[in-house]
Length: 119
Image (cartoon, rainbow, N blue to C red):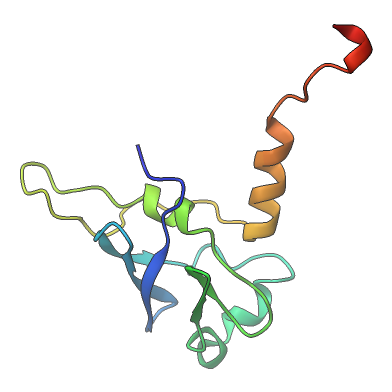
């Protein structure tokens, strides 16, 4: 299981809309964002010069327009190589969504406690 408090500790933009990532648990990998740059907030990232402006904000890859990627989603796609114990490069594409949307959807999935008069 991936630690829910995982964060990205290092990010570097690579050619072809890829990110080299290092995580707080030591895992490393390259994530290909080229097929994931859709939607209003990610549209500006289709410009390679703008994409290269990635930086870390509270452990999440972030761009000047406010677009960011959920570190937990990114980390789920990096797994140790069989028998090696070292992380492998990302091979599976994840459907990314802005971190705020992911958090809102996660919070909505929890059931609310019953009203006090229902107990």
